[in-house]
Amino acid sequence: MKVLLYAGSLKLVDKSGVGQAMKHQKKALELVNIPHTLNSKEEYDIIHLNTIFPNALWMAWLAKRRKKKIIYYAHSTMEDFRNSFIGSNLLAPLFKKWITFCYNHGDIVITPTEYSQNILATYAIKRPIYNLTNGIDTAYFKKTKRGRQRFRKKYDISEEEKVILSVGHYMERKGIIDFVKLAEKMPTYQFIWFGYTNLHLVPTNVKRALQHKLPNLHFPGYISRQELSDAYAGSDLFLFLTHEETEGIVLLEALAAKIPILIRDIPIYKEWLQNGQTVYKGRTIEDFEQTSKDIIEQRLPDLSENGFQLALERDIRVVSHKLMELYQL
Image (cartoon, rainbow, N blue to C red; front, side, top):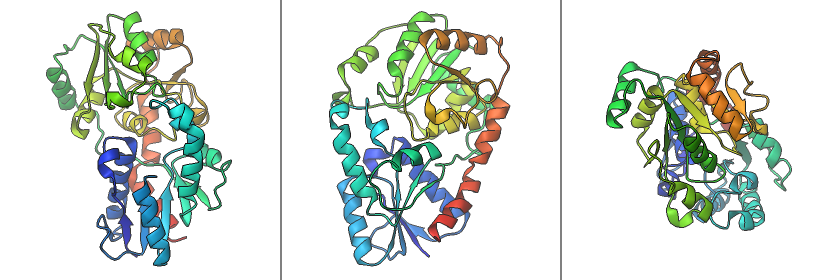
């Protein structure tokens, strides 16, 4: 059995969760010694597709003609396409039809969570749908004193200052507008958002938020994986205000890094993440402001060790064996 991890249009998704998921899949295959390639010109038995671009669909069509097995990884739904880019809400119904068309070209469809599996089950997808986490390398995202020092030195942050961190594209769906509002309401805390989206794709309300100049609000852009690990180690709170996800790889990273976490209380995390046990949750700006302060000032218990145990359940070493089982269906 040899797997082709199709990397067409990788540059378009390399800095996204999909890009990270592809790296995790490669690592998983290495861990269980499954031969694999990124070169579509090599021979293969199974093709693993992660994107819904036309070139991926073309590869699925070629693979079917050659009687190869096709795995479609469903990272996207119509629900998490909304409130993303200019025109995304208008295009959402067409996007749903397109991804349904793409996913129906797989022999099986894999999606990261039971939540996204249930959403996809309402689409006209005629293939079996399984859920399997994107996974996380818990050995990599470790909280270290050295990482904390590197992060704070690079961004000129003293040990006494408190840092609230978030990571993601510049999207309304990701909660960036609320993040800016909180920075304005909490001037004694440093707010840092890592990630980047081409501003030509960003709607006006998000551009307005990005242009909001505050001395404690920072948008350094996209950073390397190592720098991001340092950022988790050097921050005091991971604030994840997303309105919709199929999983949220950065959340897995934060759990692995043992950083206190505050998230928006949305359906995907209802069963998996328990409020006051593994993370803290909020629904309103007032919730986020008060709970952030209570976590940072240690008026609430530290749940990071409990969160880390959840990350271990999704460790890439566990995922690799489950992925191999799905390949063998």
